[in-house]
Length: 195
Image (cartoon, rainbow, N blue to C red; front, side, top):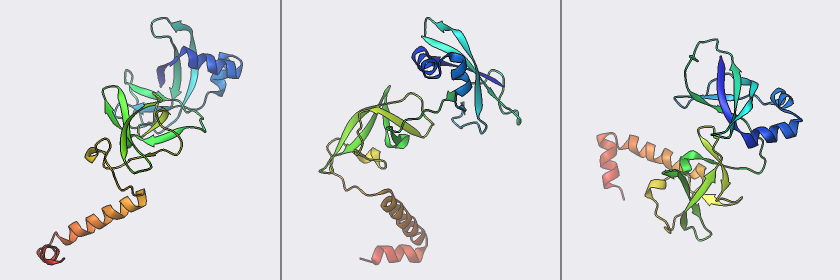
């Protein structure tokens, strides 16, 4: 199956300069993934095989074609999706999308300062993501602490008691056990009369 997609002129120039020319860049292009219209990722990788020699004057992008095998006939002609091109970045800050809130076209996180107060802060992210994580391009620094759970209960400047992911999982487990115990009349009476 042929999948058509675009890359910016600057990304194409960078690839061509790194590899020597666009043909060499295509040969060394990493395997790409296809994010389907429902947000899931197609299980088989694709290979970029062609690039247009013309830059779209309106968008400043270059059209490319990737080939994907389609043994289960899941991909259909005319379907839509997004190509995910892997990038190597050893200095990247990666955060879960669930730790972010989006207002219009802006993305925000709660940063926890040294006094355990939260600050609602705007960040910018790489426009290409894997559907569950963001690569932060500005607004966060290595070592910054952010809130990953319970965002809806926070307000800017609020003081919190940070816990680790492991402590959070233990608290959820305890709550589930308590809920199961209170599910019976005997457990409910015990919970109501204990101090």
